[in-house]
Image: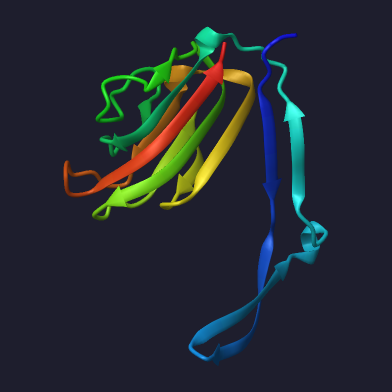
Length: 165
């Protein structure tokens, strides 16, 4: 049996219907619901990607500070204060990347993840994204950056995993 990349995704389209119960006992309530134009349900599922990775094609960075305010490729560690990946070996071609924005110091703003020049996610602290790329992308074309960085003043800390071939 070969190694597998299993992906789980889901999305909810939420509409603020504008009606509010107002503030009660110091708590403000709003009325939001799944949008009927999206069939008023959660969309998504799971699948196994066609790419088969080897142990030499997966790596991660754990709790690293993003030191770049311009998009830098994951092919090296120029985007982070870390000198290298926390574990594993970077693939030449990425088939999936996961980014978790775990904490911040000061006001580093958002963390952006781009693939081949296309912004796929802009994350606030506490948010995460998994981006599957069935056809694969050069690892240098998978990029990350923080909105603002100042060493010891404005720092975004992330976990990043990439797997491919």
